[in-house]
Image (cartoon, rainbow, N blue to C red):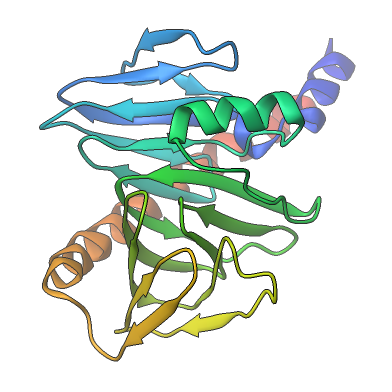
Length: 233
């Protein structure tokens, strides 16, 4: 029995432990078969699943011990989908965007359409990226917010650093966003302002509270994992 538990624990990944930590209003989970299910607090989101919020709603998503995301109204967030041709077609239907290019196998890539605020701790082995219809954001342990649609992504950085490029830049030119800056990214251009927009100033306060909250939650996760480790030994 202990051997079985060890094997199950060993093969578990970040995206098998993503949970909905809280919901205000209503949201739908869209699974890998494109089936829609009403989202509830405590639901697990598997790799390739999406969560879509309704008007006047928001969802708080806990990425195991890696970070936390607040997804605002009328937004969609997809967890690290395998980018084969079938999945690409699914994403095109879900986001209304053209094919996005995969990074290397050591990357965790999530997709956002709409608005969300993130706190992601620094990852030692993997890289974390968020893609929107126009932008690729390479996160290096940071707090930030994104407001995106089909034509423009607005990104405000509050702490850490984010590497930016647009989805159609064949030269793969990368720009680095610094704390206190706001980037505006279209499919062909990146502009950076040395200040936070009014929208991002508000989100900065939310991000600070989010980080403190995550630290408390993360401590509980560590305590839980330590207890599990003791049982497995």
